[in-house]
Image (cartoon, helix red, strand yellow):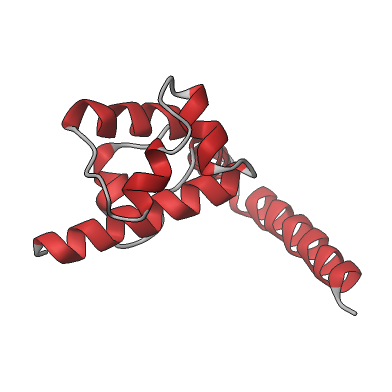
Amino acid sequence: MDTDTRRGCFLNNLVELIQRTGKSAESISLEMGRNKSYLNHILNRRRDPSFSMLLEICEYFQVSPSELFHEQPPVSADIREAAALLAQLAPEERDACLFLLRRRLGRMRAETTF
C-alpha cells in the first residue's frame, strides 16, 4: 500500500471512529489534552500526527495501529468482545442471538423510515 493510500485509510478510519463516539473532533482533541483544533488539522491534512500521537489516538479509540491504517473501518473493542462471546456459544444459541439482533435492527430501521 503506498503512502497516499495509507494516509487516506487512516483519515477515513479516524473520521469513522470520531463519528462512532457521537462527539466532535474538537471535544476529543480537548479530552486528549490537545488544543481543540488538533484533530481537525489532521483531518484537513494541515498537520501529520507524530508517532506518539498516533499511539494516543489508538489508545483513545481502543484500536490497534494496524486497525487505524487498515482499508476497512476499525472494529471497536465492544464489537470484538461481542464477537468473542458469540464464538463461545453453541451454534443454535448463536443463531438465536443473531435472530434477535436482526429483528431489533429491523424495528429500528422501520421506526426511522418516513
